[in-house]
Image (cartoon, rainbow, N blue to C red; front, side):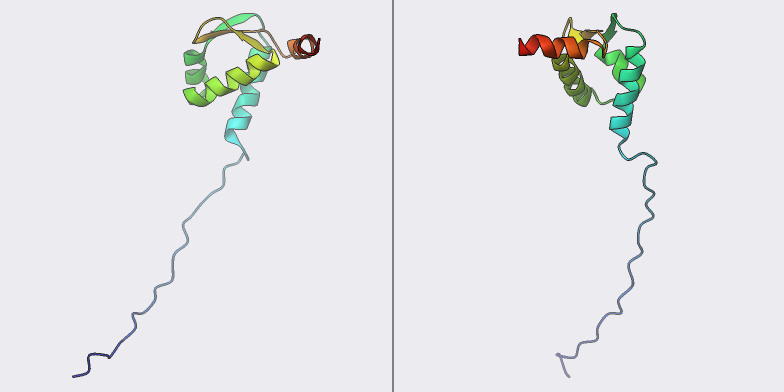
Length: 101
């Protein structure tokens, strides 16, 4: 009896998974652009982060980061932990000039 006899197992080719790329390159980026354009049509409005996350389908944690960036740029101002006032994109230039002075 030969215990060293080895018969290789036939290799089965891997089936590549079917993957369809999304139509947009960055879905979150596109959603943020749509969000900013939507809010810019109605400046000086109060918004809650919870409602906007539901409306635009954002994850709350990531959306807080976006609101913090927009607040530092002067687009909005937080009034509460979950609320902010949209000031508009036109306010960015004035806000940056006031920071430089």
